[in-house]
Amino acid sequence: MEDGSTFVENALKKARSTAITTGEIALADDSGLEVEYLNGEPGIYSARYAGPEQNDRLNIEKLLKKLDGIPFERRNAAFRCILVLYRPDGSYETFEGKWRGVIYDRPLGEGGFGYDPVFYLPELEVTVAQLQSDEKNRMSHRASAVAKLKEYIKTHPDLS
Image 1: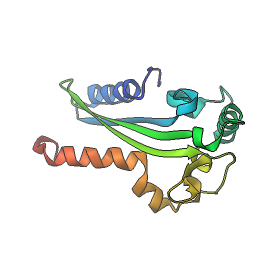
Image 2: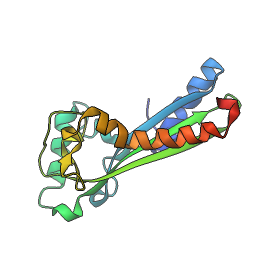
Image 3: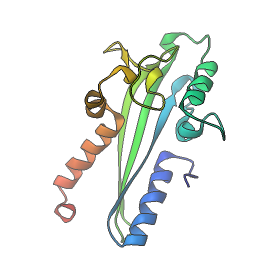
C-alpha cells in the first residue's frame, strides 16, 4: 500500500519490504505527475486522483477541470520518478528523474497511459501520447532516474 506522504516514502517502503523479505538488494519506485499551478497535485495521488472509481480518463478529466481557464503558460508540470535501491543492512540510495512539460487543454494522441495524452512537450510540439514508445522510454522521468542508478552502480562494484 502506498500510504507515504512523498514519492520517496512510498518507494522506500516498497524497497525495504522486499529487501527484508528476500534478504537481497531491492529496487522500487514511485512516480507521478506534479502540476505547479496546483501546488504539486496530483503528486503521490496521481493514480487515484479521481477517487475510488478512478481510471485514466477520470483522472485527466479532474485535472483538466481544475485547470479550466488557466492559461497555457501557467500549466507547467513535471512527471517525477523516485527509485530507491535498498540493501538488507538498511542502507539505501535514492535516484530522481524529472520530465518537464505543460498540461494541454485536451487529450491528444493514442499512445502511453495515465496523463500522457495531456502532458505536452513544447520543444517537440506533441503530447507524450503522440510519441513512439521508444522515444518516450528514452526521454522519460523513469529513464532519467534509471540513468542515474546505472552511473551509481558503475562506481559501486558490490552492486555489479
